[in-house]
Length: 609
Image 1 (cartoon, rainbow, N blue to C red):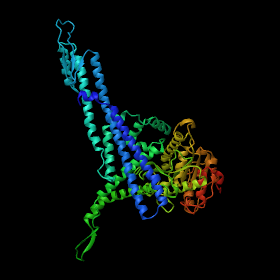
Image 2: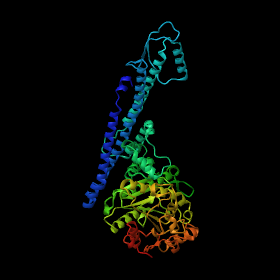
Image 3: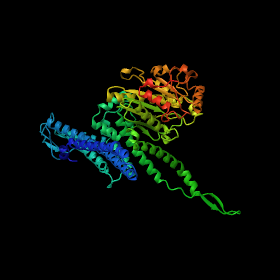
Image 4: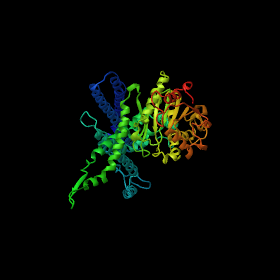
């Protein structure tokens, strides 16, 4: 880049273009939300049949297109700001060098050379003529030494300072040229295929584009305010609120995984970040699955004295060795994603509110991480967080004869709304820990809960901080654990993550805690949970639920051989009509209504045992 071009460069023009792309992305986001939560909702509610189903599928594709536009516009906006930032840095260096040169009696020429006036060194009789010098960028120890010698022997005392200014100008021009060379291919790469369908390949390109913009924009991104190191959820909330729209967009575009995992950030922000990760991961897994060659014929026949004998073919055994485990792994990831996508698609069915993906990692904690809300917890009058127990994993998050873990949150939402229809609700499935896989082995150890407790505590504090930032109050929260999930809840309730605002060093984890089918909460009294015994609730069932609860007592998951359904624990024991360990969420059941009454704060409607 030459001097005239750099002088004329206006970073504001690129920043305005970036604002335009960001605005376009916002419009695409609004269009996507309109399709998902209004148009699609109305279609499902009013029209039935094959034609309606086909229309719904087309709307899903259109929604995906808008999501892609939103994501790519975010990347383009960030890339333009990054380019403008790099060139602006070089321009400031150029302007500073030119100003210093002028103030020191030198003249900067159109080609970047610097003219210096006539002068003589002390002790010299003759005045040396003035001249011009062209600088060189970079420099090495050898070239620097040569320049120092040239300055020392040059008869004009102004030569050295002119050379220094010329070198600064050359450095600035080279820096601008390097930035232009670096950014040009990154910006050219931010183009979609010339068709109307967003494919898995397109989303894979988004991931590559993100890496390219992140690499090129390292200087720009490093200039942005970073999340507070080891910050509390309230620290995170304050950090995000203090960012400009441009800075927020850059973090979402280049660091979605980190943004989506930060407790304390708005639910809409976390949802946007995690849905980007979800789309990218789904495409990654789909393409990887397609790349696996089809399974070859399983058997072959070899001749023997007794005739042909059937045996496994060599090709099949090689395929099993190379691809079988990977294929099963990918299919498991996609199976879990299908269940999550199904929940997205069912918004509006039976009045189900918009879903918010507050946390997502298909391989986190070995079994996957999923935090999914029905309704916006930042605006809800009442929020309930459900923590599943043993064997919970993302692959089976919506499966099972007992609704599945996502389904349980849905029926809790529906039943709570019936309790008090004029108020708003959000129910959240929280699976952000390594749940034990074996009832008789791993589930007898408290270590899983000890690892998970602080994570759950942080999420609850983040939910409170985000709600207060949006609504000015913490709202009413209920924390529900099932089976080993109650052990996690017990540890979380007793965890101390440090001072948080005006709530003291150990803030209440929730307004109410419900322990369902609990083998123990690592506490021997309800009061140990820090919310007051009158706000601790428990229920149990027969048969296998009794086995789980009494087994937990024997292995010590409850302190002093105490579990929440014991009278000596000191909490409220609620009536339950569940027939087993998994039936506490059966529709129209007493067990479900009792939980909903606590969620809605209708304590007088709870039936005690």
